[in-house]
Image (cartoon, helix red, strand yellow):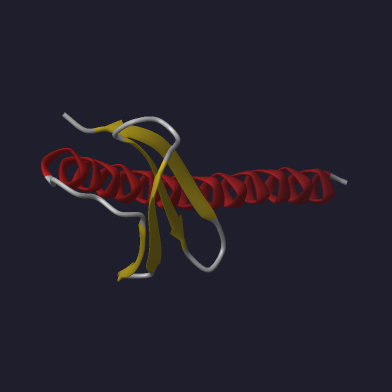
Length: 103
């Protein structure tokens, strides 16, 4: 009887540690994806603000295991552009959208 109780306790602890490790790795990937997306947004924002003429465009890049889709499009407002950055890996994706106005 005590062996049964001990094995249940060990199983609960082991499964709890496994779940914690899985969530930790998933959060690490999400933070890395967010960091990449923010970096691309800042780079594209600087390009848009400093260039004289900006047309709508799309771009695809690969960094390590991530594919980054960048889309810039004109809005209906004067000198305002929609900026969309999507970071994708084999299991999940993260997308950030913002607007940029020129000087």
